[in-house]
Length: 430
Image 1: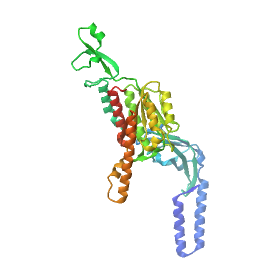
Image 2: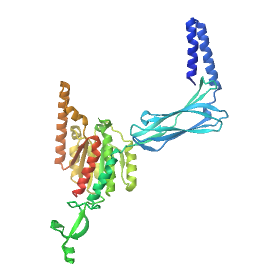
Image 3: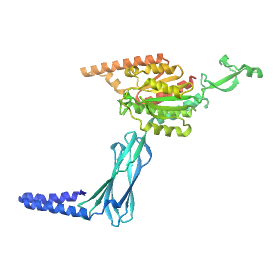
Image 4: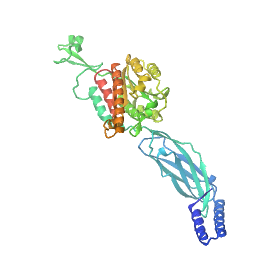
């Protein structure tokens, strides 16, 4: 049961004169009459159980994009029904236009649209569908709430895809698919050509030279079909907010851009989200199915308030890689991660693979470093400077272990990781 605004208005209209006349009996009599009319209206209202309700939601939507769902209401009774329906969702689903009035004849059905514009990545869950049926006097009515378990999966935004065309052009240059001269050699044989002054004499193919009248050299290109193994750290430090989003979101953006680029390069990409156990993984897919599968796998990944288990990550990497590969660790370069075993993990992986460690810089650190107006800002600047010094120390130790280190602001991390990947390709290290 519920009452409408008309019931409250009638009660107020009757009570005010009674209070002015100071007649309590008249006041109670008026309130009793309004309550009786409301109860009569409820008794005369159709049963909400005669209404069939169904919800339809899309499977997924990217963050910051919009989509629509549908709530269908059908009148299965013999009376005409006036009422309203509410499609409830958790706030981060960004649902709007969730309340709809209806007037249904017997056997009639109507569809109502709910617009979604999610504000958070992950699974957004639906609440109940509530149906209200008005009485003939519109003073009160019957209400029924129906539990309907529906979920809208919000995929990562992948805002860094705007950087993909320029990186693909650079990749084509590296692969020799465009007429851009590049110095340096890859590791995969491409073709034979005549020797020109300036060529490395070590690239001369003596057998081909013996068969021809001219000196012939081999040309190479960066090897294709390499392995790229990406580890997304989901431990407690990934929950720290940098700007408007947690560190984990920047790592996911870098994962998406690097995967898209490496897939176009012909490399095989595997991704795991790990802290002390594997939270998600994407592997064994090639071609056009790589990115949808990866987006689905990473959509529901959330930071865990746990320390990372780096020895377990090393074991997992070694189990899944049977040949030399690029191992990308998307984590936080911090003294606490060093204490948890990051340096030992990088040292173990660097024996067999090329290791890249990527971390997000905090833009607030630069602001804190420049503050000198009062004592609080001076202390904050000193703390920021100490943090920068500690990170620089860790970065130096990682580079001494032959790891590629990439640090950048959240919006720049993805293109920075992609650029370092291309640099490794161009230098023939992959």
